[in-house]
Image 1 (cartoon, protein in one colour):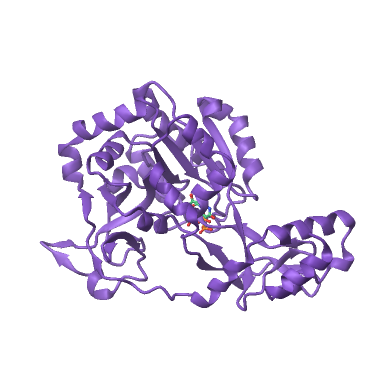
Image 2 (cartoon, protein in one colour):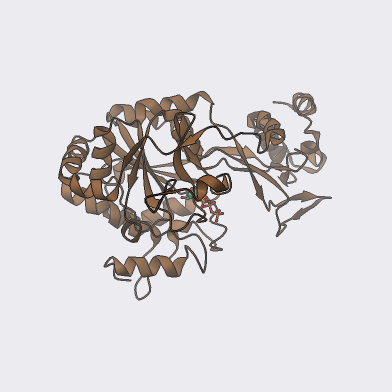
Length: 406
Ligand code: UTP
């Protein structure tokens, strides 16, 4: 795209400010900026007016569930099916590690954070240990896709390389960079991150499948006949990855996806809850849930009690449904560094929007989802904050309780 075309294109989208410093740029900087402009999807900015426009449909409890009790009762049966799928190489995993981890306040990819106390134990290493718990049983590895962002890709790859991929088969690990979306101010004007660069930020954790495909990795899924993908976040150091029982239960319950869930500790716990909305599986965020439903109980238990923990199993064939651009963008109010009067400022308070697609919206498109309950104390230790709830300290305590030497 040349300068004149960029000018016309930006005018059409109301984003002419992106060329404010063009005159000050070198030839190579100009060409980089023009390329960025050419490939940026400005259409998503239209979503800004649709903020909180989505209405809640008719909410009911999830249609397909496996409680902790049922999981215990049918463990052998569920595991047999899952182990068979794993042994046939029909399951892969996707680690979502493209986030900024800003709440932890750690300078580096969250997975490189040392959760150890008397020894070095990075979050990545702990997750790879959780993976070995399964591969030691099946006697084979599975493809592991790791989603990074433009910001942390190199550091993440270097870390895995420096640690010899934690003993995993190198050829089974596939890194890919998450797609980006432009960030803008509250009036929908896209920020410049520098005089010659558009502010582009990771497009949320729902972008993982389209990013994987856009990076050409769909061919590995096809080549290896991978039928299911277990998607998980980087934060939960206690989670089971490619848990055979979870895989088997999702298949036996004939669901197109499954979500590991834990019982909410109280009606007000800030987690999304797996329910049905207008007959489709759906995750209702804690701030969206109407009070009467949030507190509703039956036989002394919350009716809407299954909180999601960002560990999902998706059927690969059905995932293609999410590729046709149907995933909505959500606005995230964030502090975004940007150019202001010729100077790059880094605000400490939110100043604009980042656009994010969310895994929870993928669940809706799948049509059916199994709520597979697991014991919180054994499978949920998220590292979100530096201190307090869901922090390094709480995660360490839970790891210790589960026999991990720190
Ligand atoms: P969070 O919602 O905790 O976001 O991500 P975050 O950016 O990591 O952390 P904060 O909010 O700034 O503190 C949940 C999971 O989704 C991944 C994260 O790496 C984490 O595993 N994620 C999030 C992505 O891969 N890409 C994104 O754009 C956002």
